[in-house]
Image (cartoon, rainbow, N blue to C red):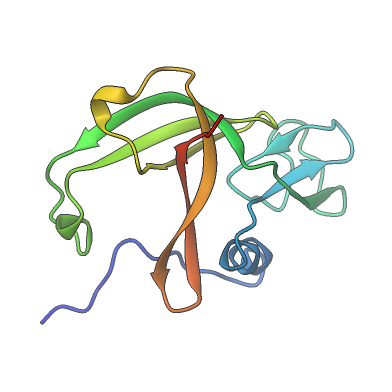
Length: 139
């Protein structure tokens, strides 16, 4: 039996704050003190103005987003994705500006619309590890 999983991140010392926050149900971003822009995925430097890690800090995200695009995945042979098909892989625009690859849950694909409001949720991927996903925003 193959115990390899392709859906688990490899957390390291740098990304540990991100994954610890996710485990608590909070989404973090990185923001540059030099240019003021937020970015995602987490990097030690600013991808816009190249400021070093002394100028880029973690901040809590609002959890609000809009749907940019999506694709319904009907086949994925990598464990454990095959047990989840079909699922909706998506790119969302976070309220703070960055674009994020994720998954939309709790919504039939036929009901998805470009720019629909979404809210962050967290799926438990393993003990103590939660992954940010998005659901349709309420209200």
